[in-house]
Image (cartoon, rainbow, N blue to C red; front, side, top):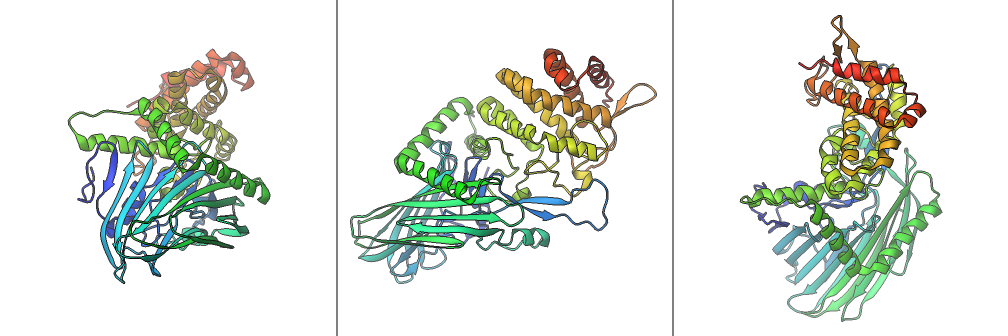
Length: 544
């Protein structure tokens, strides 16, 4: 499934046997670690070279204006962009004052391995500095499924030939320089140094930073703490500044001696809590990580994934490449969603800023079926996020002159962020995708509380949209005109078959729900007459 010869075919791993700098953009994505709340692109520990630095928190975004050559009613005025938050992955190595850089000296060997069962990314390298000093470097990186605000790295270095002065420098870095986005200067402007510093401090081997986005007003905290182990004497010191902090551990090592640094990183964010509230939340998460310890985090990660694979594994006989691809896909979908917890599931997960970090109909149509049958709590969480945006969808429908709810084509928080009507607002099928996903979830789980509550709300308000949007012809056939189906490049069609079939399912499901939960139907103002109009429209739907 991967053509490059650096990758091997293994049933439970993705292994890169040597480093190809031309593939950094791809490997940073496929080796990315996330849990649905925190995401780390797989940049090299030392940070450089890179294709695109990336550290993300689900729901943390910046806004930007959406200008048009000509204004038109109903076009969204503001876009939302996921931003690169404080980078906690960085660990720089200095060997006799020479920085470890794979582009200099001699890289004797380099291997990375993503283990789908243990949920960690392992890296091993042997490097000879330009001054001729060989060292062995290894790191193990995880983003915790059990402590959603926590990520950690275990970093080890040892000299291989003669005594060496070793310094390991762990860093937090905010507003790091990103490659320019020449395709859209408006995006580049919005993402240029999006975080303003509010607080920084360094104590012992711990550093904390708190920043705030300049337009969206979201407060983001990041903190790191370290455990240092070495048979030789070590000098450790820390410092902090507005956009960063450093903890440096230095020692003189003989061959066979290792300097081991375990780095715990914690994140927090809020659009409502105070600076002290976010700061204290980060410290609490960091304390919990320290209490678990590195071995505890590893064990918890393994147990979580053992439980997941017991439910989710798909065994493929006779085709090892497909077997690897299936498990890779399952693992990455889990990483995109497991701890999203009432937040959107972005189209690229938290592996990069593709699609601006927006959620689309793909969530309900392609992601939620897998989650419904393997990780139903995550599926329910994604649907509750949609439900939380219902007031915005009702407002959007009213703006468009329609009844019910018009859910956005692309969004982070619930506002429509697509500035192109034909491939955005006109793709009304997203409403039915959401409704059908809710029905699939309740049918599979029997979650009556969800079905009576958020599920009923979603079904009723999406059904009202279809009756408002569609119309009958002289032969009493129901039509839905001027919409864009799942093929976004064939926009603005009449009676798109996918849209009509999905709307039909939506209408029938809403009518059935109104009959099943009459008390809730009354609360939502659904009369017997309205429910009958849904069934009539479904039965008369044009399918051709």
